[in-house]
Amino acid sequence: MRVPGYWRNMSFLYRLAGWKCVHCGAFHHYKPVVCRRCRSKEFAQVELPGSGRLIAYTVVRSPPKEFERCAPYAIGLIELEDGTKILSQLTDFKENELRDDIRVEAVFRRVRINGEQGIIEYGYKFRPALSQS
Image (tube, rainbow, N blue to C red; front, side, top):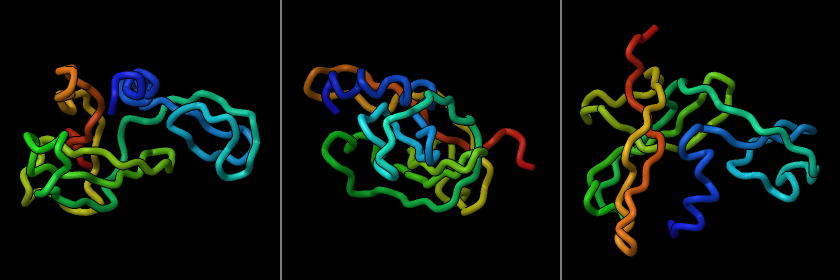
């Protein structure tokens, strides 16, 4: 991601915040002109819950060029407490600990170093929840 795109998405990357359509409830990572689901133009900014459960995951062993230094790494589909589903990198897991339906929580971590400009990009990742209920 180039610097302008990174700055545009900063509220989502740093706070798990985004926009929900007032009409249909569809979630958008950034404020769109129109809702992709119902074409409404009314949105409310929302902060997403910082915990949920891991629905599915995969381990990336052949990553894109920007993430070669991180390989292998895990990516998971997370269902947050409010039902919103997002993709995220997983952290603080050993590969044999990964399993569907485990409770996870968001943590703020370094995501990557932008090779072009050398900018360190931070954002959220998900780790096993400290208290598994």
